[in-house]
Image (cartoon, rainbow, N blue to C red; front, side, top):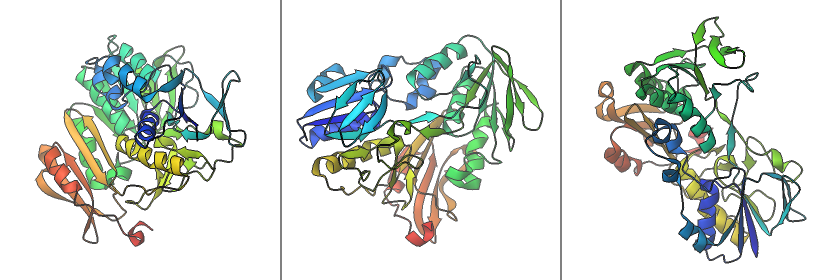
Length: 393
């Protein structure tokens, strides 16, 4: 294998490039990126960058000296439109073909948008640096009323940032309890109460019927008929994996690229990593996409070994981990919250918003949630064990 093409200039893509070089690969490396930016860190986009506290330079995941050492050919501002594993080519917009022995699919995901909102000014999603720059310009432009649709972690972080900027913020969530799927009902209620703690209106159990406005949004009409005034609307209703370009390639797609635990796709010389990859996780036992920063870096090492050896590498059984910063509170979660797992507060107090809870399934600690207790959290996350197959069925 003398040439490898990484499609996606993301954290997962860059991490795979680094892992390939660490594993001793000294052939040609090409990175195709639809954005014109070299890889950058996404978590600050909804927080420090959105507030205007840091600039784009602070988001860089690498620097020119490292990229020289990695010896990478960057094809930025180029989108992959077709993969032909037989001819060993990746076709880009405009018809250019990149010939390659191996392919790393790291195309990530794109935010879902509400229907009928194309071209309506003042409506935003937040996934890319360009998205964040456009939203930041409006938040800092004195437009006082913000409606966030979706109370997941991205929506919650944007609401927190907008509120810290002194704006009037309403969060609309279709579920009765935000974050219930991720944290369970009890802790979903606790974490979502951070909104009301800080003067943000939280409207749950109702959907959005339409956005109101001609050229620019002026309001959000809810399914129950209420009309919320809005100068800015941020839509955070999930993502869809970027897999359209794989049609006809033989790579199996089903809510992402279907892989084995070693990130192999079943097509020789093709692996997938990051948000686009749907792999069985050795800790959770679930075949799913895991959209966490830490997962992207861990998968990269596995994918690099699989690609270079041609044999599916063993994946790490490290508990999945993610974090969120909202209203000055650091929320950390590790493990897998299985159906029926009950949280027990083992340190601190819920009312103080400084506590740690352990989730147990049949007495076994399978997950831990912490608010503002990072040291205690890090100690407990090392005690987690994989849930049994029976508990996950």
